[in-house]
Length: 461
Image (spheres, rainbow, N blue to C red):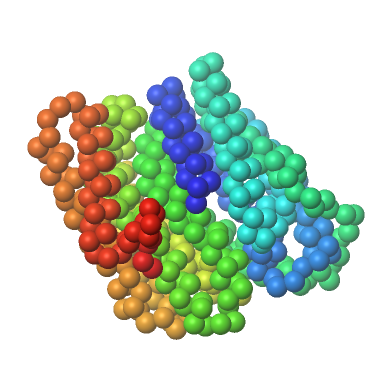
């Protein structure tokens, strides 16, 4: 969690600096490019990370065979990106994308080299070393991006930031990892892992498409500037998810995999996981909703104000997705990613329909369609997974009630403070954030959800 928060803080600060130096159109161009490259990065993994983590026993045959398979896939995707750059640029009617995509093709080679080492650290739950590597990589890439932006490189500062993050991460993983691939490519070993890996890769691909159809629609039909505003709003909305939900799911997958054969432990682990996520993410998302206009204007500048309305709409999606994102760890832990894949296919189809309907109302219409479907879908997704592992639906929601009620009360109080407190907007914003955090902690303490043990708070899960 510390490394995840550290990385998100670095990205957050870097985005503030780059938003002051670059234009919304620069962010929009990179958003267009990453719709394709992000999808290809998921294929690049071939489900390796999940297969190596979930399987009870692995040996050198599995590790080396999957490593070389990943290198082949990485090189193929690199070549495919180079070939498809012109038609992708033509699709978005943005000629600048050709050179951008050609440079971004390096991501697949850099990322493939470190996937197995990363998976082995996750399997061993050695998040201390993994977190250190990833945090340093994000920091170094951010420093290069800011330096390039100050030098007047424009959109290329964002492009090289994306390329250098996996490159620095892979270099760090090879430096810290004791494992080195041998010259082995064992087909029987691959046959033992590929079915699970392909199911995970299939789900991740479809899920990525569902999560990025909005980028595709906005970039295609509303242009680079509109996508720049949408990109900033979406990034702010997903900070709580990336900071908390991603970290919890990453740890929970190997942990739940070890208790998959014990239903009671699995259920309790799932309930603790979702409750822990809600305690942290609910107040963050509701707080962002209340202060969105002031926050965007003070932090990013008045030129980015159109993103504030979109951000508020997307917060409804962020609130439910923070909890819903934990479902994947359960499907993978019990070895049933095929169900996850079917759910993702249905979600993608519904997302495409919703975005098509919302497009006629412009940027806010797309955001509303995305958020509205997310609210409905997450409840359905949670219902399905609770039926599979045998959790009473009401029991799960009962654990969400205290943090939801406390967050709602906090949001109301913060809004009132913002309406009556005089002074510069920056100072009012700081007062809103500080008072909101303090009030939420107080309410959770009064409700008995947080107790003090010695000098440290203990969350009651």
